[in-house]
Length: 139
Ligand code: TYD
Image (cartoon, rainbow, N blue to C red; front, side, top):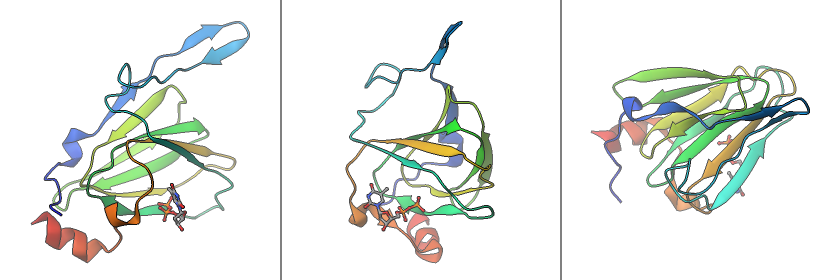
């Protein structure tokens, strides 16, 4: 399968919107409305021990919205040429990670929750888990 030649500059932080009232906030993500793909899967990372990093892979096809539903963490993106570090710390903002990029997540605050909206079902064959392999495929 061919790896997409997307770059880190194709990823941006999107305002998912927020409805605020005295009783608190609500943020809504709706397929093809304020998300540019159809969500096929939702998962969340939590209870992440201090100092741990997650991710460390790329995807051939999958794209994601990554949201700090609680707390904060960093997402480090690489396309083999450029790196971009994004701090997520507000539940109404999402980082759109397009396919074909290496990503790592670190610096999780205590009690943080990383919510991921994904465009595909889980499929291990969509993963590249070796960074040197990723660099080779990206050339
Ligand atoms: P992994 O993708 O390595 O996690 P992260 O990128 O957050 O560090 O997944 C960790 C484990 O969870 C791995 O054994 C695969 C499994 N997993 C599923 O079974 N389904 C899923 O949707 C995801 C995201 C992971």
